[in-house]
Length: 79
Image 1: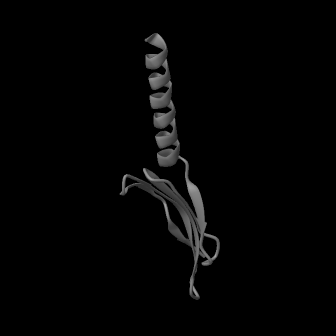
Image 2: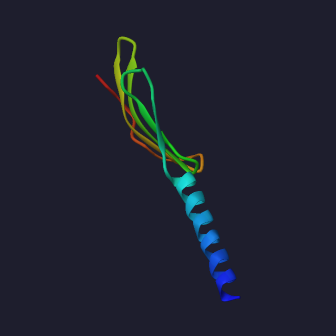
Image 3: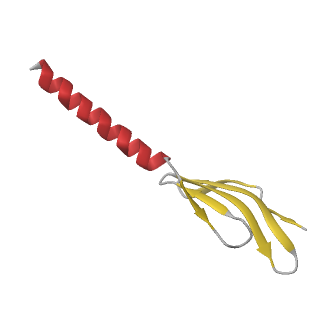
């Protein structure tokens, strides 16, 4: 009887580890706008912006979103 509970407990732990990995591990998306890279996971998104603006310069900085809400943004225009 104890072996059945132990096996079930292991399966549940493995399931939660797989779900946590899927929600927290980001994959990179590279844009062809001057070097912007967005790291996207299910729960958060980090954007390292280096975006070329026509005849003006670059937008440079970092944006962080958690659950779709922006919590940090230091993007500024760099000449």
